[in-house]
Image (tube, rainbow, N blue to C red):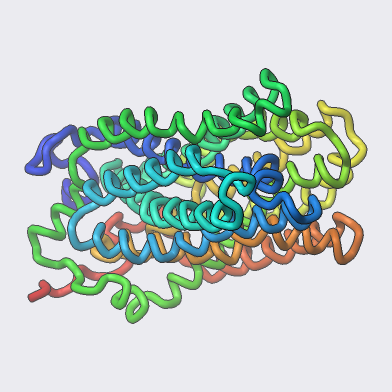
Amino acid sequence: MSSTDAGTGPRHGAAGGSRGPSTVIVASLIGTSLEWYDFFLYSAAAAVVFNRLFFPNVSPVTGTLLAFSTAAVGFVARPLGGILFGHLGDRRGRKPVLVLTLLLMGTATLLIGALPTYASIGVAAPVLLAVLRFLQGLGLGGEWGGAVVMTMEHGAPERRGLSASWPQVGVPMGNLLAAGALGLLGAVLPERAFLAWGWRIPFLLSGVLLLAGLWIRMTVAESPLFADVERTGAKAKMPLVEVLRRHPRELLIAMAARIGTDVAFYTFTVYSLVYLTTTVGRPRSVGLTAVLVGSAVQLVLIPFFGGLSDRLGRRPVYAAGAVAAAAWCFAFFPLLSGGTTAVVVLAVVVALATHAAMYGPQAAFIAELFPTELRYSGASMGYQLAGVLGGGIAPIVAIALVRAFGTSLAVSVYLLAMMALTLLALALAREGADRSARGPSRMMAPSR
């Protein structure tokens, strides 16, 4: 294995900036945390604010469904962002694309914070809300693949699981910041003030965070493996077409393995807020507190399980998390329904611990399915397409199931089916922990 393949090449290069793995990890973690903060802020607000301010003329349940429908627009946009930015990332480089995705996401979030509500501009308000959510989805669609690829390709080969798991930590970090911001403002402000202007503060704060994130991301050098691809002239002319032609099986495996993880996360976090406030009748603060504590625990568990996958393999760790999530989902809703605040917090913490066991090794598992010259496109598409079928519709499906069957057991069965799909994909996949970071196929012939 060459020094470039091992991620131990020169620490400074033509692209400028530091190539130290720790610098890349910090930059990716901060960048992805900001992106997920923006994305989750919308989802949390959809559960407690947007349904009332942008869809006020319908019943509370219908308003919540409509609010989550606009949230789902972001998931539909994510594959498009994966296609666009994956193409650019495999053709032009990882670093410039990551700067662009952060800029797009931050700007859209800032504009949401300044958006008039239905009371001011009528139906134009939810339409503009959906448009800005679409732009958020485009940005996030390109962010995940680039951040994971950058950290993995800069890291040591024997620690790819741990290296690639750090951008995954951006998910609970972003969720923690988003839920914390809304929770704090909801606690210190009267309900009227919170609905009138307080909810806007976390969205407007994204503008300040954006500037800090851009400065940090600009200091990181290009991936050494991508630089190697450039030197050899092995870049694909149409990366997505090559992924579909050469790696359809790997793409389907990535999607199927990802769907169950995504459904579990959005059920345990976003839908749990809806279930607690509308079905159980608990205060909004109870659910937000539980999500905050669970997200804090994930900050430690995700890199732990990512590192564990370097020793035990991606598939065994991933599968253990899927089995645990499938079992816990049948205890989860009864605990939310009849438990004290402490029991509710415990239920969410355990649920997110099972998710961390899947999410820790997931980044490396998906990225290792594709070779360097197609990795940004392949990993992005596998991850983001699954998001549409997974987290994008999970809260909507859960609300509809409870409405149709009158019991949360239907949601647990839904989760069980998605976990079974994930386990099937893991059974069909090859173990990637012991393969070269260049990927499972040869480098392509030079493009002309």
